[in-house]
Each structure stands twice: as structure tokens, then as C-alpha cells.
Image (cartoon, rainbow, N blue to C red; front, side, top):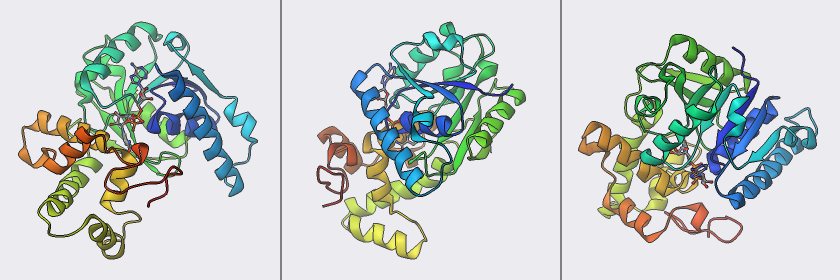
Length: 289
Ligand SMILES: NC(=O)c1ccc[n+]([C@@H]2O[C@H](COP(=O)([O-])OP(=O)(O)OC[C@H]3O[C@@H](n4cnc5c(N)ncnc54)[C@H](O)[C@@H]3O)[C@@H](O)[C@H]2O)c1
């Protein structure tokens, strides 16, 4: 089955990026959110980002043609015509489970349902549907229009055919699939990255080094484009907290327990770029102070 129409549920940082890369690849997208302001913001940010790609000569189509493929919607009725749904709402397991149950009722029988979750088990979401064989993880990295890797994750019931359709879809939108054969906590990339992220936070907590110096060291000594804390502010501290909590709950492994400093910052509402303050502070244009 070729994916020609997609619905993206959740139009935040990730959902808007996913809708954009689908539209740029010629795919019709229904972009859903419960929050109308979030939908308006998503359309604006997609328009800005498509404009940047056009300025750099990276797209061969007019902005209007790309934007015309994105249809903002407030309900799931488009599920009756799409081939694939990608869920990208908050990293909260109960919310995602509820949405998977609803999507299963609205989607046509052959449609695949995917989650962009960072760490919630695909199998648990699939169990909320009557089509667990057609449920998979399609995990993008931020910022979606720039990052090439996309993990394609099999839950316990996901068929090879579903995983193959997911892989073909990722290639169709110009990304590189990373196949993940079992939905272990954190999948592959976060499973590798989170222990070093936690270690970096603990080093700050213990006063061993500053946020700025750790990021500088990682940029200049480890070949990273962005430091751990710079990336963390872009991703959102609440998102990282949600993913670490899910990994800890799933494994019971204290290595994944969110450090105190992260827990306190989330409680204080210091969530990164989106709130103007996280590991760093930002002005109203989103530039680091
Ligand atoms: N931020 C990242 O770097 C990143 C990277 C990979 C994966 N993820 C995962 O992607 C998902 C979304 O993350 P994000 O950073 O885009 O979050 P976000 O907070 O930017 O956006 C979430 C959106 O979901 C919407 N939403 C909430 N409940 C909804 C519902 N019932 N129906 C429809 N929409 C609803 C919200 O209004 C919001 O616009 C999470 O599961 C996260 O773990 C995030």
C-alpha cells in the first residue's frame, strides 16, 4: 500500500514539522488539534519554514501549492479517507491511549496508525485498537524538516508488511528509516542518548561544570552541532521529562529516573524555548540571551 493521504494528530512542534515534510513530498495532510490556536500557530510556522527552504533553493514548488495540501481539522472524521495517521500529542500515556481508541473507531479498516512517541511502548497503544497488526512507531527527530533520521518501530503485533509500508513512507518523504525490531523503552536513539543526557544534568546538579561549559565541550570535543542542554531547550524539558518517566516506568531501571534538577525545572514551568526559559534564557524572538 502506498501512503497518499495522512492525518497528523497534534499540531505542536513535532506535528507541524511532520505535516510540513509530508506536504513537501506531495502528500495530502489533515492536521488535527484540540487547540485552535495551536493549529493557527502550526500553519504560520510551516509557512515560515517552507519559505526558508524556498529561499535556499531546496524546493521546486510554490509555497502556496505546498500549503494547499495541509488541511487543519478539529475532529477525526478525515480518518475515513487517510492511509496513515501519525499521532503527536503530549507525551502522556493515558491521553495517547484514549486517542488510539478513538482513531481506531474513525479510521478506515486498511489505515495504519502510528505514534511519534519518544518512549511509550507501541504495543500498549496498539492494544487500544482492533488492528494492532497495523500499529507502529514512526519516531521523528526535532527539528523535523532538518533531521534526516526517522525510527520505524514494531510493536509485538506489528506485521512485517506494516513495518515495510512505514519504511517506504519514510523514504517517500525524503528521510532515512532506522528500523527498530522491538519496542524496547526509548527505542534506539533515545536509549543511547538519554543516559548521557541524565549524566550531564547530574554533573550540573553536583556543581562539577556549568550548562554552558558542558554544551561547549560537547560541541567542540564530541562533534555535536548542538550541546545536550541546547537540544533539550529546543525539544522541551517537559517532553524529555515525559520520555524519561516512561522509560523508567517501563524498565524499573533507576538509570532512567529524571534527575532532580529536571523535575524542579518542569514544576517551575521552565520548559525551554517555548516558555522563554529552560537551561538557558531566551528573548521574545527566541534568541538565547
Ligand atoms: N519535542 C521533540 O523534540 C520530540 C522529538 C521526538 C518525539 N517527540 C514526541 O512527539 C510528541 C509531541 O511532542 P511535541 O514536542 O510536538 O509537543 P507539543 O507540546 O509541541 O505539541 C503537542 C500538541 O498536541 C495537542 N494535543 C493535546 N491533546 C490533544 C488531543 N486530545 N487531540 C489533538 N491534539 C492534542 C496540543 O494542543 C499540542 O498542540 C510527544 O509524544 C513527544 O514525546 C517530541
